[in-house]
Amino acid sequence: MAILKSIAAVAACAAASTAAAIQPRQYKTLVDSQSLRDALHIENLYAKAEKLQEIAYSTPGKNRVIGSQGHEDTVEYIKGQLEAFPDYYDVYTQDVPLSIGYNATLTANNKTIEAFAVTLAPGGNVTGPLVAIPSLGCNEEDFPETLEGSLALIQRGNCSYGEKVQLAAAKGALGVVAWNNAEGTLEGYSLQVLYPEGDFVPVAGITLGQGESLLAQLDAGVDITVDMWTNATVYNTRNLIAETKAGDHDNVIHVSGHSDSVTAGPGINDNGSGSMSILEIAIQLTNFTVNNAVRFSWWTAEEAGLLGAEYYVHELPQDERDKIRLMLDFDMMASPNFAYQIYDGDGSAYNLSGPAGSAEAEHEFAAYFDSIGLNHTEIEFDGRSDYGPFLEAGIAAGGIAGGAEGIKTEEEAEMFGGGAGVPYDVNYHEDGDTVNNLNLDAWIEFTKAIAHMTATYAISWDSIPPRNATAAQKRSERYTQWKQEFRQTKRYQRWV
Image 1 (cartoon, rainbow, N blue to C red):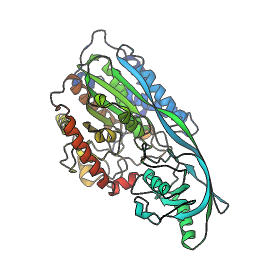
Image 2: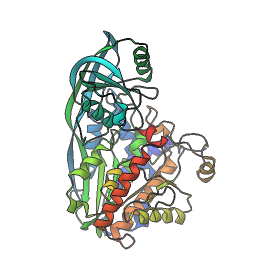
Image 3: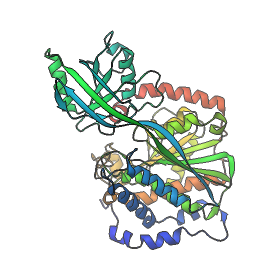
Image 4: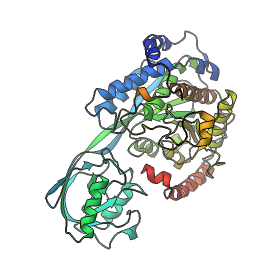
């Protein structure tokens, strides 16, 4: 499988072509799909990916995780690129206050265990007997009648850790020891619940092996006293937003991707690829005028549970929500063993349709891929990326993706090339997610598809039905009900 173009050839002309590409024309014309797509070049995308990797590798953690200098520098880099066009965009950031865990210490019967603080959990110093929760702690009946004065040992899986911690706290637990359900640490892990219905208590994360060892001791009748200290700081991480000054601001197309990585690596496919795709499109769009306002967003804290997008939607007044005709989200555009995946907006593949307009967005993506002779397939509209909070708010949404840890099927290998039985991205959430492992051919095609959608709806909403608040509410209620069912699937359990 020929995945990569010549890296040397791409890098050689990147700087010159980038400088030339960002010069706007003197006379602007109305944007159209073909012209916007013609302005896109892989050299410019690759140069931006290199910049993100440089940012990540200049930090001790070699990543761009929220709360790190790497993420701050990522936001500043994108912001600086957009501020080069002050007559075209209004550019601003939105503070998202999060309790970010930085340090943790844990001892069990005076034996030190390596542990990590968990984002969204409060800091604290607690001591008490350890009580194992025999199931995964997603339901009230999983817990004993009281945990007063104790710490709960709960394994990861089946639901967000925030739900588990709230249930433990309601039973009187002083803290929670979270143990992994897979190999690796819980460094950078999050409770994934931004607006809890109950209380949170301090949480420390440990490995699968450490959790199994503690559980075995408890099962053997050994009393374990745990001392746990966690340090958490309320930190304002930032969403970044740029909106065209021109166009109808009562009928907005919202184009987005997330700006953060996981702790394991620089996150150049996830999601440097999507975030740089929309940045390059935003730059090239300045050569044109628009009929409808285009809003670009780079969300923070997607990897911590879609927190930046959730905060944005939660804080957005209803009358402003109603102005978003369509939200398009782009995550992982350069997966090495990619498939051209379109979110199932009409529900034909996975029996869940999005709010009015989502089906039409899917059909427009499909028609575009058909028009250029590229195969495509559908993926679940599961709320796993930043479009999720928009769906829950009844806002039409759509998007495309190259694939994450899922396994490519034989049929997909015939459709797209690559290896059957192999993940779409073997470097997903690993330190190998670098510029050397991007599929550049897929990346430019995905980016052109994004440009097509941006141009199409910047011109006209003729193919998208008007937003209906009543219908949107019904869709939102249906989505919320379905999401509870989805949480029992293996796909969701792998994610949480």
